[in-house]
Image (tube, rainbow, N blue to C red; front, side):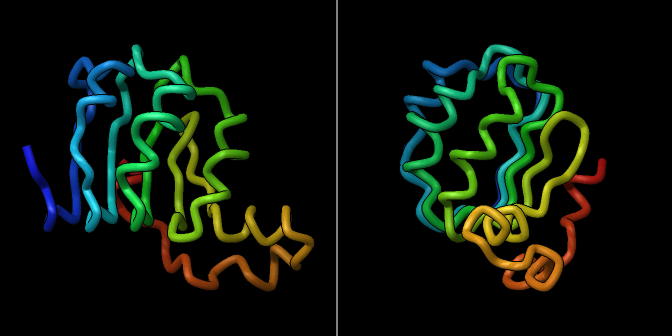
Length: 123
């Protein structure tokens, strides 16, 4: 399976597991991904098997995933393209969080490069 031009993918509540994530192809153009409500996916699975395959990802929805703790934010801030993450039934502006981790003024940079919160994360 190849997905070179895929820009948006929604795999909500579809029995994803870490093992299934490991079989996903490189999705070099993917910008928006929703894998919410997949209770068998872990933080380790996302960091090891998913993130390396989505280098241009801007929006990621991880809501309602009990095996994915909020500590995943420490891994997600390393992705320079990522702007917004839905996690634990809330939306995080990763660009602002990244700026605060790097010693910048989060309030001043909250919208830089991130844009408005995508509607898909608010559903």
